[in-house]
Length: 214
Image 1: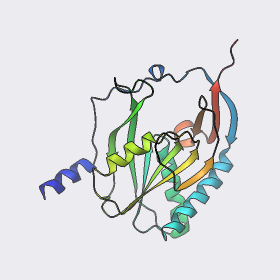
Image 2: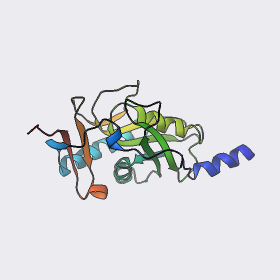
Image 3: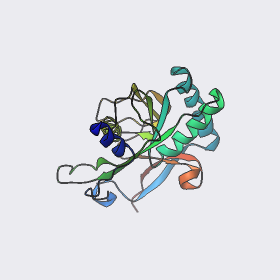
């Protein structure tokens, strides 16, 4: 019972104040990025989200026992929209949780930033639930790996699935999404930028690249 109590308290949220914030200037990621192409507009994103929600509902026989977990920042509005569409299809809205995963650097991650889970909130226990992690872009897989490690601290879910709006490739870990909105081939130096109205004032997806040298 004591262990269960500790797990319950931790599941309500935790912080890692020792982790320094991610500074993009220290990561090797160029700051002089410009838009190279707009690949999705608001209407296209809406259609994709509706299709993804239908796929999630079909694969899991409705909304019962589902919990959607958005990875901050832009995985949260994706999870909220998926939950809304699932409710429209099934008449039942799955509960929503969040994971806050920050990129930071330490002496052991000199090549690229390292993800760390800062905070977690679940509206209900995750034990024996089907969890759907939601994120805007799947890239190396390290953020998803951090999310999986965090989830297992809070219980043993029945299953964990991954839903992403964009899969851009370039995986470093053997992690694949179960539900994908759009697969977008990219160059290593390019960045996929997802904009949602909730976080950015409008909906679009664009590819960013280095500005041309003067």
